[in-house]
Amino acid sequence: MKNLLKNKKKLILLSVVLLVFVAGCKSYVDPTTKKVLEEFIIYPNTSFFTVLNEGWFAGIFVWPLAQVINFFGGMTDAGIGILIATILFNILIATLSIKSQVQSQRMQMIQPELNKIQAKYEGKTDDASRMKMSQEMQALYTKYQINPFSSILILFIQMPVLMAFYYAVQRASVVVKGTFLGIDLTLTPGDGFANQQWAYLVIFVAMVALQFLSMKVPAYLAEQKKKRKGVKEKKYAQVKPEGPDQMKMMTLMSTGMIAFIGWTWPVAMSYYWAVSSLVRIIQNILIDRFFLKD
Image (cartoon, one colour):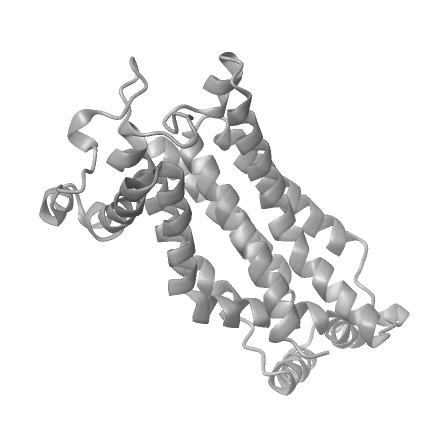
């Protein structure tokens, strides 16, 4: 519990690594045609049990998401289907998500006080001192109604859905057979670049930029709140230089990894990721405005 903000950054990075791993584990795409194999396409009339036969994850997570995309995409187009599915997912977990992000932003706001406690016991390694430090930190969490571990709970809820989205946007028939504003969503940004179709690059760049901003916005909002309150950190309460550097490194590494894998995954996934990142940014701003008091 020494620095849960750093731990959360590491977990975010871990989730990205897991996504990279999952992306390489199984492919439903024909390596020759670069199209999803017909037997793996999920149509509106594809039954739950047909997909469940592939495994519990495909049945419980992938099939429902693919059908939501098919339903709304069938009335409009694939891009709108992905957009609505993403928004519905965020609404579904809004209560947990809001609570988690409020906790995360509060953690950033009390970081100077946590640093003060840590500085007080710096160099003291005996059990009594470590216990007193833990007790003082716990008292601080209680004062500000913070559960240090609740801010990472949402990551464990989102990870299976994130993985399911990766497969659902590949397999939903409205994505495989349809288009979004004339764009074939089964192609990759790399394919678009090779064919000089710049719309693919626009979506890719938007995905990378919004991913970066979604990780920077919470810290920025916390800093602005401290400025509005006129908080001036004393020397002992300031974050050590390596702290911000490590957090910046985590943000850059996470964004870099998303850019790396995003170059080779279907642009439908890039579009989903961009929309999801934008939703998180808006959510953080609304939480800061309406749920966190100065």
